[in-house]
Amino acid sequence: MSTLALLFLIAGLGLIGWLTARVRAVGFRRDSSARFSSLPSHHGTYVALWTLLPALLFVAVWSSVSPALVTDTVLTAPAAAQLPPPGFERAAVLSEARNIANGRTFGSFNPIAQQLAPAYAAAQSRYDWIGTAAALLLAFATGAWAYLRIKPDFRARTRVERVVMLVLLAASLIAILTTVGIVASLLFESWRFFKIVPIGDFLFGTHWSPQVIPANDPGSALGAVPLFWGTFFIGAVIAMIVAIPFGLMSAIYLTQYAAPRVRRWMKPILEILAGVPTVVYGYFAALTVAPAVRDLAVSIGVTWASSESALAAGLVMGVMIIPFVSSMADDSIAAVPASMRDGSLAMGATPSETIRKVMLPAALPGVVGGVLLAISRAIGETMIVVMAASGVATLSLNPFGSATTVTKQIVDLLTGEAEFDSPKTLAAFALGLTLFVVTLLLNIIALTVVKRYREAYE
Image (tube, rainbow, N blue to C red; front, top):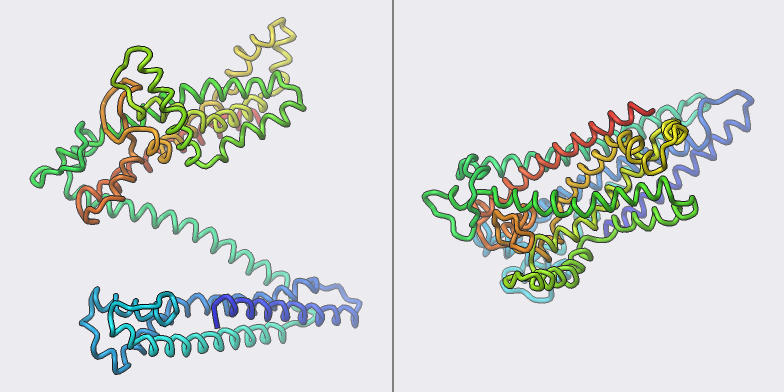
């Protein structure tokens, strides 16, 4: 039986348990006028949880254990005596036999795999039925045990709430542990990289050329300063020159000048920009903006201009993060107490003077927080840089020149054919760790600023 069918059966048992327990609880209420601590639905939910959760937990464990049991059974077959010694070749033959048994392929490169396929199919079928029977029996047994506990004075609501709280706690722990695992992986691989390349050469070196790494001095070709500069130049300079003015002006218009009907329409439309996939921005940058930037450069005398430049990537990236700046600035300006605005107007100031000298200074912490969050988003962007910027690492202030970013280089380093433990590949993890630390610091600063702002005006 397939896993999906088994899950449907378990869900059906859970539904039956919920209905029968609820009917029994309703019967208690019909025969007594006393007050109950739980509703009939709480009793039904209690039985359904006991029917579902142990069985689902068993299915999860069995799914990870049964492949090893199936393989051990296959290895006892007579044809398994022809298998090569434990290693990559043996694992490849067993994988091929498994694919043939499951119908994922119709041919085999190795005759032994074809001979082992029937044994694999038989073992798989046997352990599938064992798992199915055990899961259904467990669901029935735990559901029946919970059903027998249903009594008029049974506090089902307390137990259901306790189970729900445990489920919520488990979900939170999974999210936290996932984050810890990602950070630990980055730290471990970066530590391996820094055992080969000195951290000073990596952080302060000005030459980045991972294609040719000298064996006696790998740090001389892996200086990441040009990457840090390209990331800063594209994401925090060019993109912000576009995003800050347009985002701030749109926020001022929407909060101070736009009619309520116009604001209701324009704000969602503006925020649609944040939901556009980055690959669409990449196409727009590569096919529209980059050629236009090249033509502009040629028209002003830059004859060597190409379609891949820092300016093209930065412009489109700035358009992409306008909603981040606009949304935070909008909320910050709208949160300024109306008494401050009314007081300024009552003193004879014009609306524009009130905005410049009262509203914006009061909303400045929130605006700064939005800008920092937008920078964090910009320096982590990859697709636009891949499609519109060059991959050449340079230290230049020329917006028409070549530039690359940390994320672009991470993609290049991990998509090559280099060995996984080579300095070239491990450099991607060191770059990722550096980017993680920078964005984390920017987010902490932004949240601190926003929190201080909220405390001032709540």
